[in-house]
Image (cartoon, rainbow, N blue to C red):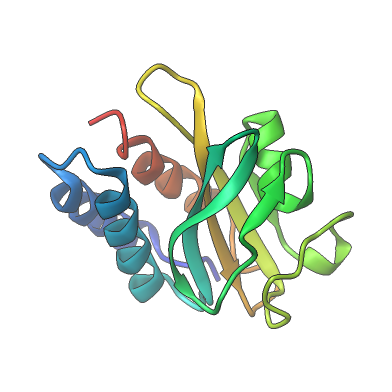
Length: 153
């Protein structure tokens, strides 16, 4: 099962747009989006952002257990997404070469790039699940829409 159904995602997209409408502060927006998604996606144990700063990913607002603070570009799922600018759906993180285990309970993950209004990498949106194979293309489609709205409102 996906982290959410298509109908649930349509509502989440509308809620996300309403939450960040008229607000330009990235901390406020990513904090609210992380909380919204953490509390509404199915079987998620982490929802948060890593932002690009000084050539690496730095932990930003999130919901879940304490997380890794620094991630090098190209390392782990988040660093791979930042390097390739392409979403990654990982059905089993234990089979992802170089996976960085911030929470030992995590078994699957989806990470999406966040681009600023000029199309440059700003960071990544990271979602973890204790369930194997928790994410699919439906999740990718709607989480990408939500991510795109952070800067391109």
